[in-house]
Amino acid sequence: TTDRYNMSNALTVVISVFYVLLVWVTALISLYMVFNQPTDKNSVKQFNETWYQWNNQYMWHALWYRFHVICFWMFTVMSIYETQWHIGFRLGVIAYLVLISVFLKYVSKRTNNRTPSDGDKKLLYGHVSDALRSSSALGAGRHLDYMEGKAATAMAASTTSSAHKANPGGLIPVASASKTTPLTTPAMHGIKEKHVLKQVELQSLKNTTDSDQDTAPVSDDVHHE
Image 1: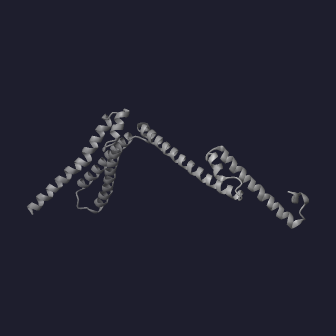
Image 2: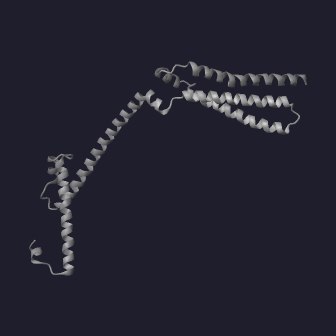
């Protein structure tokens, strides 16, 4: 029984020491850093790259704040039904939980105020954003050149196929035309547009002729054409 009692006391002491280190000591260190950490651009940038940056400190103290709030409500409910506990013990624990909760809330708020906002991060890491933006622009330019080349190749193949269909007798050599005219010159675009317009006109004339044949005799002018 004595050994078990001594072990319980030792475990209580160990838990209390860890609690003080994790809650009180870290909170006091954060407050010291809040009031003494420089606020110039270089210092803030270097501090924000460490593992104990302001955002991490804020999450740590906010976590412990929520933990103590939960403990406060749990102990309050237990105190209502546990009438065997001394009234002084119950009031003392409740007062301590309220005090530590308010203190942790204050520390988390102060550390959160030192956390760089989105605008501050843009100022701190502006050169990084510019480098990424220029790299993206370079990649987009290369992709655009690739797509232009691919479109020019497809246009050349379409123009060659259309030329063979428009000249079944081989009166106009397609190979020589493709050699004399570059694929990406404005002349090639003009030839393609004229060819498309010619096909539209022929199709429109064919539709008009078919309609006239259904309604009236074909005129002499049409036969002449």
